[in-house]
Amino acid sequence: MLIYIILYSMLLPGILYDAVRKSLSAKKAVLGFYVLLFTLFRGLRWNTGTDWSQYLWHFQYLNIDNVFSYSRYGGDETLEPLYALINVLVGFVGNYSLFLLVTNLFVLYTYYWFSIKYTPKPVVTFALLLLCASFFPVRMELAVTVLMWTIPSLVHKDFKSFLFVTFLAFFIHKATIVYLPFYWLLHCRFGLFLQIGLYTVCTFMINEALISKIILLLSLLIPISSVQVAAQNYLHSNFDYGLESVVSGSMSYVMAVSFLVLMHYSPIQKENILYRVSVNAYLFMSCISQVIPESLGDLGRVGGCFIWGLPIAFSFITECYLKTRFKYITFMLLVLYCVYKFIRLCSLFPAALFPYYSIFDSPPYVR
Image (cartoon, rainbow, N blue to C red; front, side, top):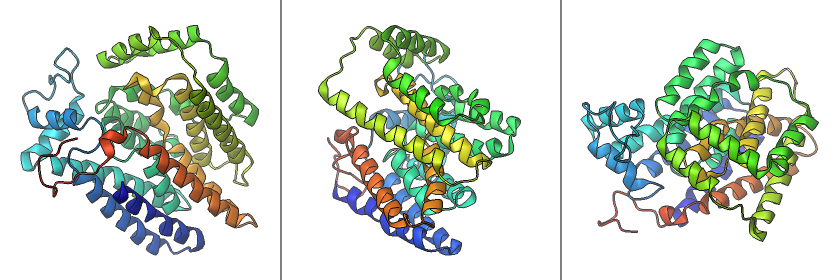
């Protein structure tokens, strides 16, 4: 775990520099260093990360003849063709480590480019994007990274470009098709009370029967057998709210509502389209994560389509409050939130993350 702590602690000096300095060229250099560092960290791992064996198996057995017919689990469900094609193309020139390096470089460069291009505090945005995703991106997060390229389409209200990019993501992971109607929803203006009301309904007031109907409907709309199996298992299980889940849920509720209040009252120009879209993205992510639990596998990752909302919104908020007498409190709260997100990441599937193995470790790589 030490290597995780060391690497992610290196984000803090960059956040501090971003907070107190304005030199964009220096910030680009800092972010370039982070892109290189985390590309190597993510790309040179071995037997580390969730679903490692599954993705390695895909890479080894995909070829140009089965791009459109490769069975993901040995049944009728096929792997998305664009993701399969990427595996095959990289396989022509290199091994699985090259595949990890290429895909992680794409993810991190996307974070870099959008942080520089669209946000006032690029290092803050980049760090939060890292911490709001996962240590090692899987297929869904690769698709979500593609969805981030819809941000220019959302800002300029270009539906054709939005549609094209969304379908690219769909051919990497089918679950991203649910993102399509949010082209219109992300542009809506929601008052604070409506935002809190929506989130409260999703958290407390949706009854078991309605949740079951929503999950069943989504499992039918998304043609992935693993989603449908997970949904059926979930629907036949009992809802068990123990003390730990109640405490955790209460803390999540308070934090989400606090963020919505902060975003609403921040002294940011209300006509800033990107800020409004980002706040809405955070709202939708929060609501979806309450209605659709992570235990539903692929379906449970749908809320991840909007992970970019919080980092972008926080970048604007940080820019505003660092100019006020609350600048020290702002920086302290930002750092504390980063630490909180890091701890949360460490708690997700720790057996697959720790210890960290690289291609330079002596085989066999056994967990």
